[in-house]
Image (cartoon, rainbow, N blue to C red; front, side, top):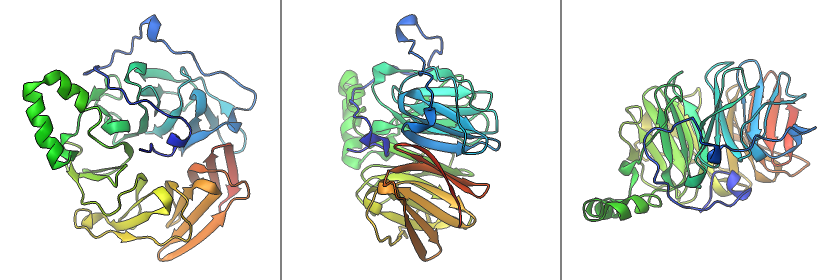
Length: 345
């Protein structure tokens, strides 16, 4: 099994947490993590995700490192309260942001990324959160390994754990239904491993999309209340999903596999393969001036302009895990640090 891109960085154990319901942010001393170390060149470590919040670039990565930049060239380290690997970051505006990562960690900032506080930290879960996003200033979702899903409707004051049994295979639904009645304790253990890893989330209006391992593409058309697991059209892992301004949905992942359909035809089995000339795993999809930039392992960047595909190979050959295209620049989060290049596209 593979976790969204960061799986190649750190192995993770798969144990189930009995914790349920709301998480109390008042951590007991025994669960208080150590803060991320302040270092001279924080921009030179591994970074897994990167965003532009309207005024600053914010990147997260190894050992709880969080950095901020106004220009994408000069980086300052934020105050992160954990040393867990952080895997995703999301802002609803220039000030309010969230990050998540290993130990089911969820962090929050109210000052644009300079200072962060813990909203959730569950090392006993021993599972990583792999993506976090908000559909408005209050409603957020955090997803991760083995079907992990936490949801908030109060900007993270409380995170509620959910199990999406809609996405179970039919045989597993029957098995778990019987087990829930006959052996509730075993049922709780079994649900820890029944669902594939949820790697990435996207939303447009009432429609929410989750992609993950084993070819998972799941769609909700009522803001996450119920879900439909689409018919499998690829059996490998998807590591990102994007909805572009041309009303297309693009999914991409393992071994350079990428597919596209229209937003209106999401449920119609109409996915078309995007033909790429390399097989490096695609980690992230970014839209830039009507084109899609797909960043991948081995320093590869694929630029999709309609039916045309341009392939760029970075000299470093380092895996690119995330990117932001803005202000004429392409800022790359790589396994060896952050890099700014001119965006000519």
